[in-house]
Image (cartoon, rainbow, N blue to C red):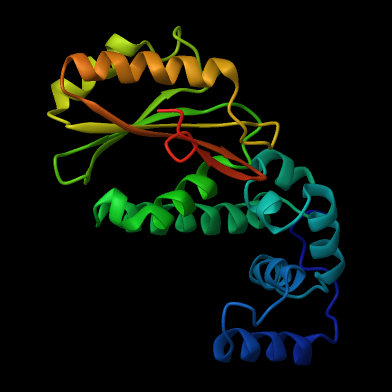
Length: 230
């Protein structure tokens, strides 16, 4: 039964050892299955949840897959339920908020790795394309993170004139295009390169700089600027 406390078990010592390692150790104090297990312990307090932790990792393809899974899929997994699913979603939400705070507090170009971490947490494991424009001020600080489309990157979703006009309306001096590839590979397509060129050209005419176009995938990221494609 989902979210059931079950029968009392003899794992008190094991839970205490996990807690001690968590509190006294570093980021690698617990293995991936133990991270999942510890969270499940808070939602299902009197049941051996190690087998459940392992089935979750196997089904969703690892730690990131579990935390980025749809709430309904988590809740319906055998042995889970809404309480357990919510425990994972609140951690994922906190991780996104922390990563976003790291981006908002510093100039983007001076905290590039923080930006990549934020984008990866938010987009790498999506099953659909998400298109965003990061608008920056003259000091390269984030003015607005604009979610443009939950779909394919093309001019129907992100028209060059619309992007540049919004930059002008916000008083932004520059922008960074971002989207993800659900296939996993971040390699840019011809269409990705072409739409970037059109937006960059529209920006040049009105004094808006396209600093980069970052493509995020499960296999990593690609910067079109670093590739010499902008």
